[in-house]
Image (cartoon, rainbow, N blue to C red):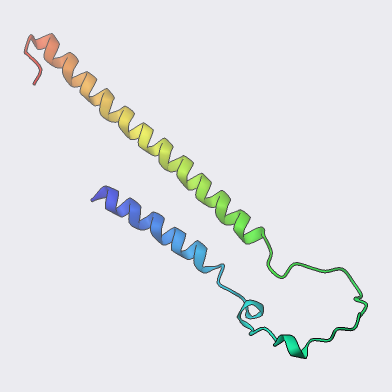
Amino acid sequence: MKRAKQLLVVSGFLALSFASFAPTDAAAQTPEPTNSRSTAFEAVEGANTEDVSGLGLMVASYGIIWLVIFGFLARVASIGRDTEAKIVELEKLLAEGETPG
């Protein structure tokens, strides 16, 4: 149950982060037919700019990386606590003179 809850949280985060990168109006426009294009040279003023900023992708990727790192550390800590509890239980059994199992 705990694992299912974790997967639900992670999948929800991923769905929200990918939903923010939906195509813009520029991507949804239909291209012009090739016959209507001009073949004459026209000078362009100003620099070409990007239509899509990479900032959102960078923030999402860093967020996902941090989630994976924190998830890994939480899992390692959980395994360490479980191992410590088993060691204490075994030490107690050995002190009493009983056979583990």
